[in-house]
Length: 117
Length: 209
Image 1 (spheres, one colour):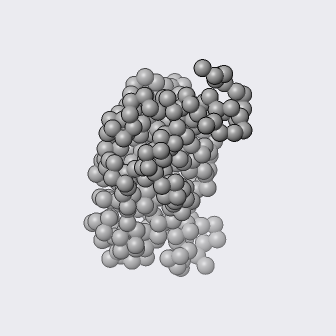
Image 2 (cartoon, each protein chain N blue to C red; image 1 turned 45 degrees about the vertical axis):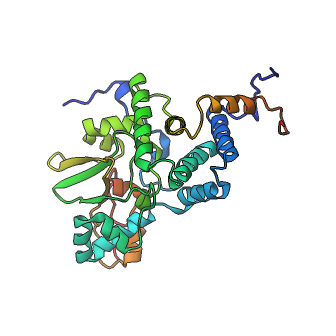
Image 3 (cartoon, rainbow over the protein chains, first blue to last red; image 1 turned 60 degrees about the vertical axis):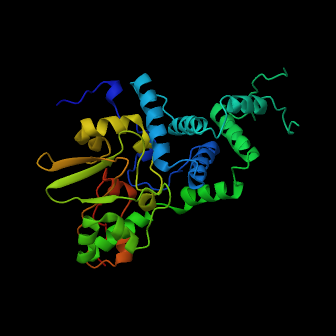
């Protein structure tokens, strides 16, 4: 079985693993990734869903993304993770449909430097 | 509507803003304890790392009875060292597979990102990437070559795909030249990549003390 050598088949590892024994990388690449990860755990610990439920939601999000992006470019794991969490919370009725969009729009409209009432 | 055009800076990007919105909503509903959220971040972002996995490996290298227990029941053997998974700790069923002269093992989660967190911390980015997930099953030797690891053709190569129930840890081969090493010295030799098994442990440069 000859591996395809086209650009699609190349492993996009990037330089962060250049020394494969490097252990000191950042776990999260942006603060929001850490917040989303922690929210998912916290809500699981609090009994809103089981980790298996979350895993199923995550698998569904990732499968959908993979199918739409066969070359795998532009993948951000925590964006899938976030989408899975949002979908699960809506499905469980923890967050109402549309509430998140409304809250996001509200936050986006904040003026600089001070909180909007 | 107010002036809600994008600003060039200080406006969080899409996912950051959505994350903030979700947290605000949950806070409003009283479903969130911010201190506990911070504690989760501190735990997984800083405290839990591959050290636990290295402790398991070093014990197996130095204690034959422990090695056998580890290969028979990974979850129980890890618990002997005080390593247990909490909710989402992904330790309900740990299977440990052993590298040897005739076989090399490598671990993947093709569907998402399952990984023995309690032993190795959170997975590195490449482990979660589509390229690794899809390719390591199809062409493992080529993928390992790209990590700088040449697995001889006569050696069997087994790919273990994590599932909802099972997490895998690879017990690497103990490197040459470590006969006189203490368990503590051995722990320091075992990197995360050797336990996912995209790398092997080299003999230490200075040989045995």
